[in-house]
Image 1 (cartoon, rainbow, N blue to C red):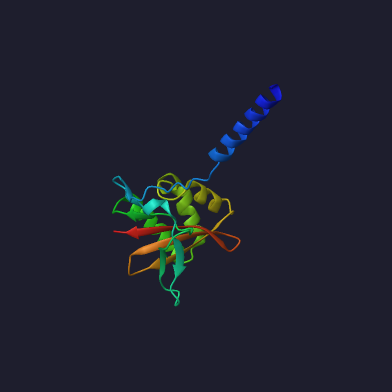
Image 2 (image 1 turned 135 degrees about the horizontal axis):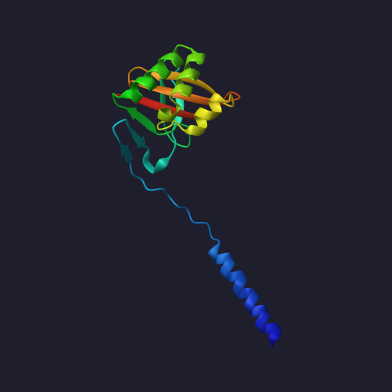
Length: 161
């Protein structure tokens, strides 16, 4: 009798674990989220899905679209002190002035980390990542491209109002 009860208990435990381990797909909420403050607006894509960074065939225009990519949510920069810092950063980055870009990031690290991941900034300053920039003049966008060993890690798009 004890053997029968023991076998029944084992079968019940196995049954519970099998049925409780079925995979359930959880979808993120499909909504646009905006964080408003005096400095900037962060617009997150539907469901938090990262878009794919791409360049036009002529290499003149960059964009982020689609899904399952490495392009972070847009950061819309309003006229402010932060806009001047980001504009200086992107103007020098687009001109290839890497030393000045590093100086700007070091000098304004606290302000920049409000719109760019602190880990990306730190890894760039510690030479773990490279940083290049591309623009799309028709959308007034600049894309900060953080890479490691030639592979894009993340792209931070900025849209200037």
